[in-house]
Image 1 (cartoon, helix red, strand yellow):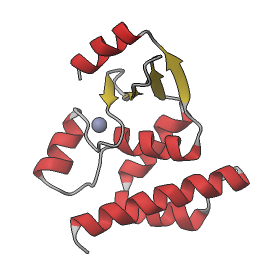
Image 2 (cartoon, protein in one colour):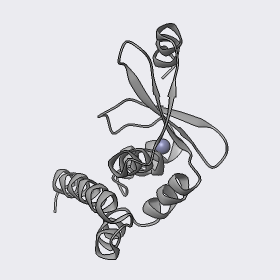
Image 3 (tube, protein in one colour):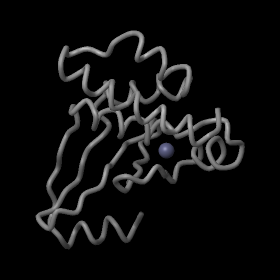
Length: 136
Ligand SMILES: [Zn+2]
């Protein structure tokens, strides 16, 4: 399978994981297994971030929003919606350079917790949002 096909499969699995989680309150083992085949250790790290409530949607009255994900070292990463990109070292090396991962744990955690609708929300002012976006 090409990288693009894997990406589409991953998106579909994340969507499916979200739907089944909302219907049953649990992630189905077969969906988790398929996601693990695509993402390996990154999935486990992403689930850990979700369990520890490290993913937040930051929104402002104008309707703009971003994800904020706090990494293991305490550093936080701002992810723009619908863009699979993160500034962490793992993204640069594993995703962009070595191409042995589809995404980093931060992007996967943001997408999964968003699909499962178990994501914290924080509202900030329009001006604060501009600062956040300018610093991405
Ligand atoms: Zn990352």
